[in-house]
Image 1 (cartoon, rainbow, N blue to C red):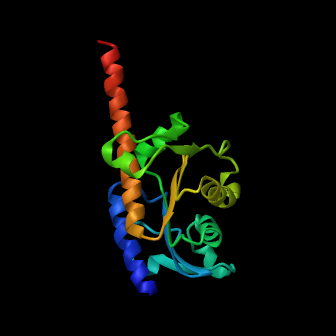
Image 2: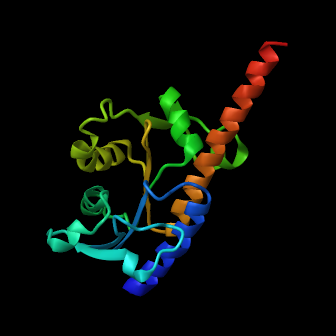
Image 3: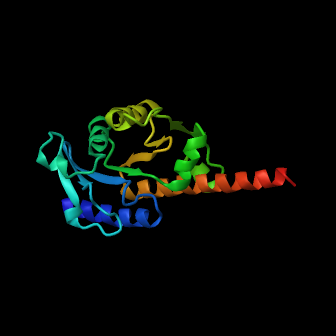
Length: 196
C-alpha cells in the first residue's frame, strides 16, 4: 500500500514541479496510510525526481523520524487528525495565485473552468510571518474546518488543499493558478484600455 501511495505522490509531484507549483524550497505532499499514520516527503526532497526513499512514514506519536520529515509535517498531521475525509494533503505555492493573494482578500474565478469548479474563495491573512510556523499547524486546519472548504489560500504563502484523490488536488491547484493568471492578464488589458 505504501509503495502504491508513494508512486501516486511521485507522479503528481513531478507534474506540479514542472508547472512551478512546488519547488526545491517550497511544497509538501502526503497521503494518509492508516488512521494515525501518513507518508510525507522528506525535508531535503527535490520534487522533480522523487524516489521511495524521499518519503517517510510518520505516526501521530512523534519519534526520531520526524527530524527527517518536511517542515510542513505538523500541518499535514493536524489536517489528518481533525478532518476525517482528508486522504491526501498538499502545500503548493503557484506563482500567479500567490501573487494574486498579496493584493486581494478573495478570488472569484471568472474563466469558465475555474468558475465551474469554484465560487468565491476567501484568502486567509496570517498577519505576521515572524511566528507563522509556530501557528500554522493549528490555524490552517481550523480555517479549513470553519470555512468548510478543502482549499485554503494563504496570503503571500500559497495554498493548502486536501482531498480523497491526489489527482483532484493537482487539478484544483491547476485550475486556481490558471484562474489567477487569467485575472492578472485581464486586469492588464483593462488597465491598458483605460489609458487609450
